Length: 93
Image 1 (tube, rainbow, N blue to C red):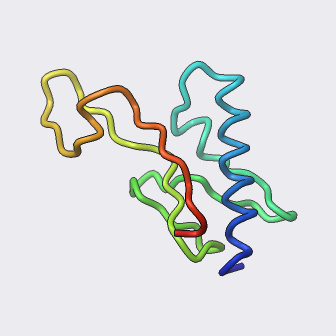
Image 2 (cartoon, rainbow, N blue to C red):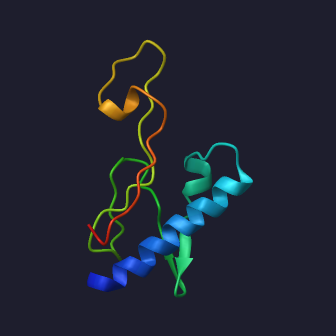
């Protein structure tokens, strides 16, 4: 599934995450690890070893989580300085 087929899959991924957010106060790897089902196939949402992730079924990246610094820890990315950023997807890239 590549090309424009990725758009419905990406929309399904974010809809699944939205529904999880309605049930859980904070989403952790535990809630995201099972992934979701799209057209009868399990699609992973995260890879525990990688932050930025691309499921093999998609042509482009699907990044659901970000890194939060520990109190007093080193800040590696600009989005660690404030409240979580509300990233939105644009097309398949």
